[in-house]
Image (tube, rainbow, N blue to C red):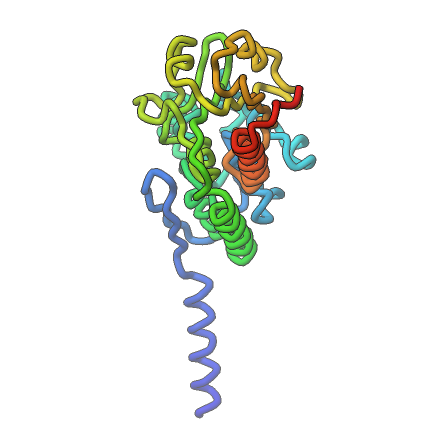
Length: 300
């Protein structure tokens, strides 16, 4: 009788585990309760696709948007749109369990339409290092890859801490981050790029502006006189317009040859690779400090 009771209790416990609801909170603070981990995902942003591969769930992504190109396997995923708009019919045909949405980058009207069609939208919009790590954990849990998501998050947090300890308390430098040249665009203090500037011991000269990606003027940059100017552009190569600042010889950044380029894939996507771009920025800023302290002539 004791043996029978034990087996009955064990079966009941196993049944309870398998039927326990799964609850995960997204970046909008919305709780998503699911009967089981998702198995079909449409990702509406490149960083979401990359994060899913990081936690071992790349094979669950049945649809993705343009520029979802990392890792290599992501290039084979069927496309459901891009920055210009989403293909709602293609998304409907794929019948995903969940749609990974980007409130900052996706068209709100299209997201609302997907909700009306009955799709569950899970928001991924990390704005700082902590939120990137949280996304790794959440997406791991959402896809049943809890351990891999946790390991990726822990590694991310450890590297972030190491960079902060190494660079955050060095001499403060003023930094202008240039997103584009025409129009002249930057980033304010609410973005993960601004968090990287701070981690490297810098101050974003446009941190206090209200818009996340403000349009600024050359006059405003000249007035702020940044000690470092950084740009990513759209491709691997250094954007030609970054060197247009050399025409303003009075700029501190020009005087110390502190006009830097970081590959956009390493600095425009809130994934683990963002730490590679952050470390590059920290090293660049450290080189500027060294030149300022030594008074050495800048390298051409």
